[in-house]
Amino acid sequence: MTLPPDFTLLQVVPELETGGAEQTTIDVANAVVRAGGKALVATRGGRMAARLEADGGRLAQMPVQTKNPLVMLGNAARLVDLIRKEKVSIVHARSRAPAFSALWAAQATRTPFVATYHGVYGAKNSVKRWYNAVMTRGDLVIANSDYTRDHVLAEHKLDPDKIVSIPRGIDLERFNPSWVTPERVQALREAWGVEARDRRVKLLLAGRLTRIKGHLLIIEAARRMRENGVEDFLILFAGDDQGRTGYREEVEAAIVAAGLSEHVRLVGHCDDMPAAYQICDIAMLPTTKPESFGRTAVEPQVMGKPVLASDHGGTTETVLNGETGWLVKVDDPDAWAAAMGKAIEIGGPRLAAMGQAAANRARRLYSVDAMCEATLDAYARVLAARNSGFQG
Image 1 (cartoon, rainbow, N blue to C red):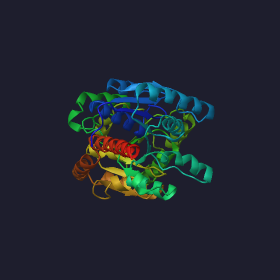
Image 2: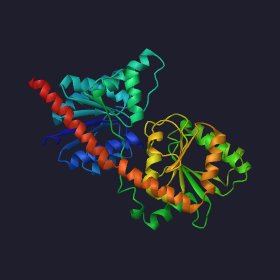
Image 3: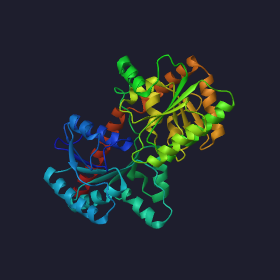
Image 4: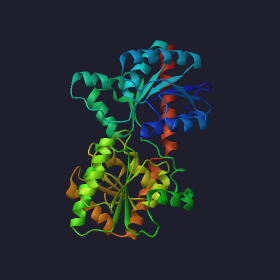
């Protein structure tokens, strides 16, 4: 299916700082522009806004990140005005709080509404389940993995025809080892204090500093690994604390207490992840809660690096145990110590072979082009269904 020539997409996302939902927002906006349409993003803003505008998208800045009911009503009014002014074809929400304003505005203007489930939301009571269900009240739900789709179907008893699984896409041009210059790698080495002559096996945990990402688990696993005589490693935590200074200080203290100051390093936010993956030998995703997709398990595979990942959630789809990486028991320091030790000790040639297998599979299944094509096709099907409904 193809989009109409006057197609205008309005995506609504809390902010454009960093993360999988934000990157997907940028990718889809770019695809719409390349297809000849207009792409608007309503958001508080953030460091990725410049990329959106450089790609031909347009920013509609408003406080859609809020959970304040009065501000949400104000956002709905702003979105109604924007939809009417820009003749928006589809409204696409990517988070629950802004989805309320977006859904109200879409209903008021009779505009098709699509929502993406970017995560698996917990619901301990009926109020929370009602809150989460806002993502299912439109024309179509997009799940970012089969794991997420199964969760939504079980949680909300949704008609299976109203939900489609579209795995998150990776930019195969950006994440291409051939395009990462030695100068970029060297600049990052210098910023991180990792000397080229340091031959230790480098393990990279990329992700914001938050407890569920598993930093403390890895520190404890590394301590036990050293007790077992494994010394030839350097672990890099790449990601900022986004204001969680208490947790960062806890991680720093844990590193010192474990005697790992020479083996574990916090390197802060990284703007050049392709170069970061070139520096590392193995990537890690030790999340203590399941990731709905796990972008940082797929990006390194595209770059030819094997991955150690928690054996739950979307990573059970993206990492083939023993072939493209290893799936490790969740939140188990002994299991992680054993898996990390095994990965370190198998040697460069075996790691390279696993990395090549990972790249071949990930580049086939998880390209941003495939994700964008499937998303635009979903939009076209929603428009066709709406048009046939109006005509009927």
